[in-house]
Amino acid sequence: MSSKKKNAPLPASSAGLLRFFEDETRGIKVKPEIVLGITGAVIAASILIRILLPVG
Image: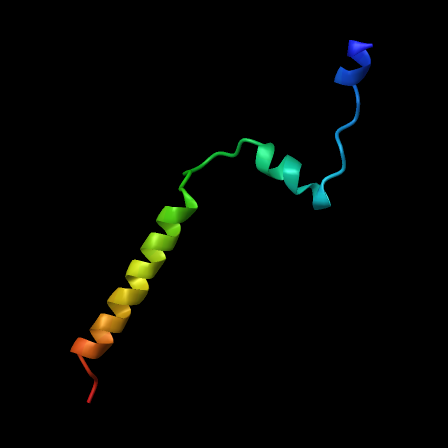
């Protein structure tokens, strides 16, 4: 009976996203927090540049 459980089909996930994220992909792995932090820093830097160096 345990062999039946091992061969059982996987439960349906929403549009196969569960399987997509389980696959190992190549390339650089970056945490989402780091991406958000870098994005926030770029936005803040562009706002500061606009304030400190106004275009006449």
